[in-house]
Length: 51
Image (cartoon, rainbow, N blue to C red; front, side, top):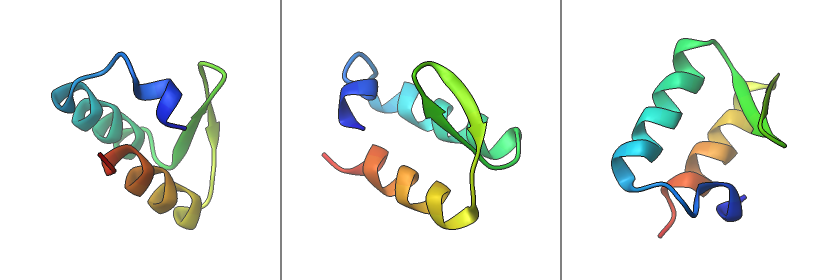
């Protein structure tokens, strides 16, 4: 998933996470948002937060 975030700085990553939370529970896939489970969202958030 890190390739999706390579153009983003930490501020944008936080905004990305906040948008996911604001919209409910979604994940980014091929530039489209899809609903996902809380567990999937947690995994995504951890992946985004990794250095």
